[in-house]
Image 1 (cartoon, one colour):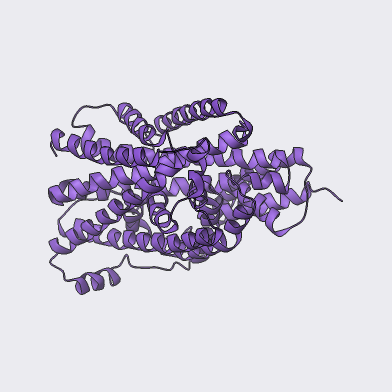
Image 2 (cartoon, rainbow, N blue to C red; image 1 turned 90 degrees about the vertical axis):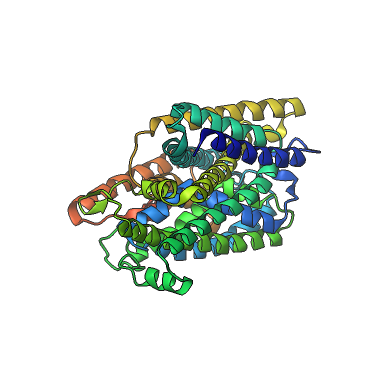
Length: 483
């Protein structure tokens, strides 16, 4: 792809986002950045959340991971559907009843200030790493695909992406993001459809033949019943349920969009509709995963293996789109990566800014001018942290989606334990011990998993979030008040 065409695509795409931003930024209030004036159409929010829920990580990691893990990720999708039901019928009504902006304010109402700060801090750490790792993969793809050829250093690419996100979200924040993410979700789904049709055409398959080819392929194994495997059905299903509750229902970046909707009933419809959208999109990714391995085999593309497993599976889909799918495929992939990057990172930055501003800077009770200063300073700080984390993990390898879920298991586990205890019990804690209980539970989960792997060849896999949450609940009962 020529540098001129690359520049035109990026400029045109960003110009569209800026137009949307200007329209959304009219008649804003002090809280518009954080709550979107609670006037977003629920169906638009549901569709726009696809981009936030997928990101570039899912775009390349889920298809690429099929070569090593078959279609076992579908077990995770089944569990996630149950998780969305819990979010729609349990968490969402509570958030609306309490009229929350930062969802972690619930912990303050239910337990007290220390639990509140602890829960918010765990979110800030987890979201910072999760968002930065998603941004990392996006930047790596952009570098490999386009900017290395222009001799642009990767740290410049990181800075430019963060600045572009700043420009279209700085004024009205989540209000703009709701609309821009809907557009970016449309681009993202279009990219997947184009890739599938490109492979279908190159393999000279009809639609029915393509479906049969996918269904009968050796990688089309959906269920893993090996209890020692990290992809065992029960581990995947339960972790899909819990990770969805944690990474969506207890995640400020996802629920902040939902709470821009005026009515609780419409917000519930938003979550249910989004659950269908995201499950369908992820299933398409799995089908694409089988197709790209078939395509690689048919075209004699040599894939590196180590210990019987494919190495750097995140690189396969970009490799094919940029070198074998023609100019249309390359352009579509570029737009998809840009769309997924902006759609997932912009809401994360807004959520981190919201959580820190409300939970630690008490922005809600500040005068008008002070609110603007706090928001700007926190937003700058969030961008700096993102940049530093991406730089620190630049040389990491492997499927990043696995890294994200493993980190989430340790950082969201205590948060999940706090919420489950609050929702399904009436206990109160000796508050000063809550941070100790949460940190020690995460640490003990890590040690316990290492112990089980070494002695029993049993990997918790994504189930570490279940173990972590359970240990957190037990620890909280240990420090509960007697009366």
